[in-house]
Image (cartoon, rainbow, N blue to C red; front, side, top):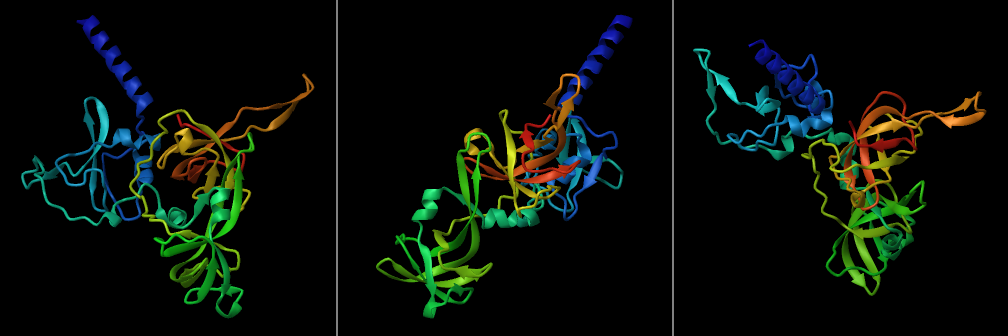
Length: 346
């Protein structure tokens, strides 16, 4: 009997150890949580998990309910154990007047998808999802360009008419107007990763005479100038329902630029990585950020040596192009900067 109890204890200890390695709950985690307006998947998972990027492993789809993969303000999340593993489920039970647990029967629920809890705050990344683009140099150089405003005006804005010249697509009527921005290159290979096309406005083509088009400007973020480029408008719906997760494969990269041109990087800042879709990096992938180790002098060996990198935060990719990706810093334990490394968390 003692051997049986000892074996059972060791087995339970081993199981708990394995679970702790895979999915570690915070010691002060709640048993239930009521979703509030302003919550995100990252903030909710941070309440329960030591490693918030493991959210998909904690979340358990309840097939009894409509839209089991979406969470809305007012939803109640319950921490339960399924097959020996911690899981979060949504609205699984309700209390009767007799204080008995009763399973919920399927109910019809009409939900506004725009009110679903996003993975992260869209206030920070919205403009990059809807407007900013990364293109190759050839595409930008081949695209039509602003010739002038009506009556020869150098700059134009919303409500004005302008003339543009170039090879226009007969099927494209609405164009975004862009200005050449940063040039992104790989810090190690020197490869051109892409050119940032900054959104400055949009207009509708109302006439075409040879290679000269007339456009009515319906939106401008800043003054539109001669030489700004025109690209057919893309359908860019905001993807707010991706889940934070670790990349499917091992990826290592580097922060090569910071939006806004600042030198220091902190939480909720947008950064650009030298890795993209061809490397397996996708929207929703969470990466750990490592501050590059400093160079110190070894007086004994009489040489400079770089000390190990230090984990300094986490970021999540929200838009991935072929060769690079945009990401938002979710947390930073110390000041970050261009040149810091990123790799799989854990």
